[in-house]
Image (cartoon, rainbow, N blue to C red):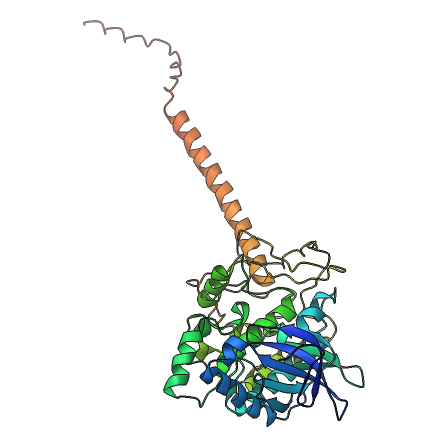
Length: 411
């Protein structure tokens, strides 16, 4: 069995690195080469299933053939005492840990320095007919290269799906496990619904969620419980990115989050081009277009984005939750029935500055018209009251009596 202090084949198990729903990862030393490796061991209850066991090993063999600088490479496979994949050990923090400890906003070059390599790595995986199905910050390791630049590496293909795997037993197994495959906060709508026809666009949706977190500093769909989170995903309910994020960056991220997968990017290369072009429109590559996390907060938010605003922050070390950052300006919930340019989000974009100025002018004119109308009504009332008062008759001027002519004398 795999346990610290034991030796399995040519690998001396040193310590446990982590554990997920499908396997446990150990740090191991190659006894001959003295090189460090990460060994992912399939959990015993899953290893007993012949279909899962075979898929796990088959996906490891495929991953071993994909050479990409931002993809953890499989260097060996162990079948006994339990199925295990031996991979290169990357010394770094997960993206989730790195973001939580950063305590500041990401610069635009940092956003691109993470998203672009991940998109390229996932594109290489898709080209081999494999869908990752569990892309999330916990499966992206952040290290630095010899020049000090960020070097993200995608790992954990334990629940990947072979697109060409269409055997009856495999389809049946995927149907049975469909509702539990993946991490709820990063599942695509079709994954949440438990559908079998999962393709590369499900991974693009998950990368879109990661992109939203990098740009906004909060999760787009996370809610008070898993049920509400999944409902938000299926209905496309999230707060669209607004100021200070540019329209181009917001549109590039929103497209990846479309509920209808036909409205998403068809492949990772398209997403790559769109996000680079969007940031290319920025006037500066410093902190433009990034939601600012309060200094020293050391946390990101995963909270519901619609009213009522319930904060579900990631707990800080020591068991105390740090103060939640204020919501971004113009944040408002998206209604799936409201018109708007956000594909699949079903909501209208936040109001722009020009629209706000127009509304103020319109309100001023309307107020003037109301005042004028009120004065007119008052004038009519006064006129009617004056018209109903009995007229005062002026006395007729006195006239001197006119004497009648004297009768003429009779001749």
